[in-house]
Length: 284
Image 1 (cartoon, rainbow, N blue to C red):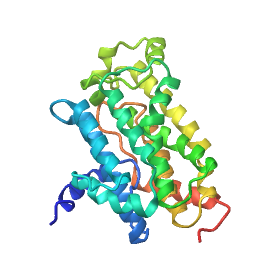
Image 2 (cartoon, rainbow, N blue to C red):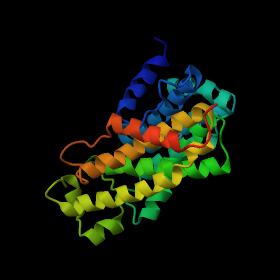
Image 3 (cartoon, one colour):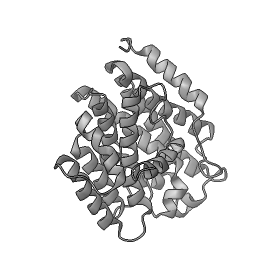
Image 4 (cartoon, rainbow, N blue to C red):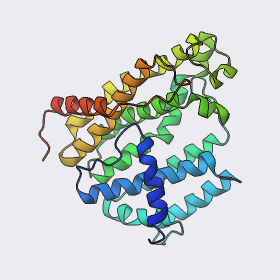
């Protein structure tokens, strides 16, 4: 096993925790390889920002410098970035998308609260939306229209993940539920540690975000019809995973404390079939 393979496999193991299929097995080998490389890199950035011991800011800045080498003709030191190098070259991935992901994690080191949902979406523009742009670049289907639709989908997926991780985030002194919503519902921050069936106000705030995410997913769903070929298949899986997560959170009535809330595979598949059925152009 070479230096790049070991960490890549470790990061790919995290894919099972995602709400959506990262790289569907139906896809051809080449785009799957590129999607795995992008995913591994985004996980590396988040791993440093969320869990690295020591000075995370310095580590993120070091990663930024190492990553920049991919566009400057240098071989990066990190094996994950070495795995990304062929994808950057083949797909002409935009450097600024990775820069924004790193910036989002730098923000996490100094900002732990968001006043309004609009403020949270501002954070998502750095923490989530760049991933969608990278996926579009993998399939060479980046246009102003597809990017705008993708941004809505990615923001929804990010906020849904925050809904699932309320207690975990609170333990890290991060609260992604908007402060305005918590105040209006009369929820004290300390309640976010336990929430659960006995705290309807906490659950109501979670469900408010779920409703907003559904609106974003509905607004972004036309993206499927704007894409062609395998891009349509891959992206329909991401949106379907979000729809299935919305359903799971509603079934749980917003209780993300008693047990983990995960989307059911059958719901993801059903949503994917519906999305593809609504698309007007047959994939080529």
